[in-house]
Image 1: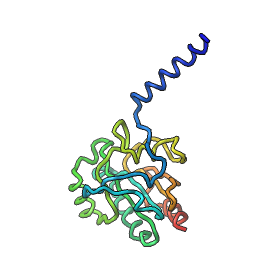
Image 2: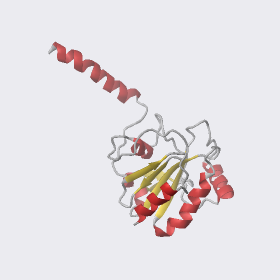
Image 3: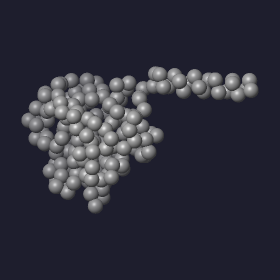
Image 4: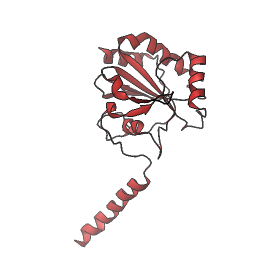
Length: 190
């Protein structure tokens, strides 16, 4: 019994410490359509509104080397939106203060510089202790999909199937107009 206590004691303490001081919070929901988000105008939106569509969720930033990807995301939206693709942009200021603006400033920037007309949402956190529950789910390695792991930079892209499964993830360095992304979208739309 003493050996068991010596073995389990530290394990339990580490588990408790991880819960209390862990970098991410465990997601409350287990399906993408369970999440509520706030759009860039401040209105609550349910992701269930997009059920039956292929969704690309992207953490964005206006002062990033990848900001020009807004133009390619807009082209995807214009090309495949009629077929059932929806792009959802989530501004985040987690990486070197590259999204410092207010939601209104972000919306104006995106529309004026890139003609963004796909749905944009209120600025959120995509990592750390204040991570938004949606991104806690997307990055959770135990959430029932193979695309978890922390976000390393702006413009990480998650592809969601028509039935709400996370089916792919693309690094910030992968351009939205790349053959790899386009093929994944076209396959998901079939």
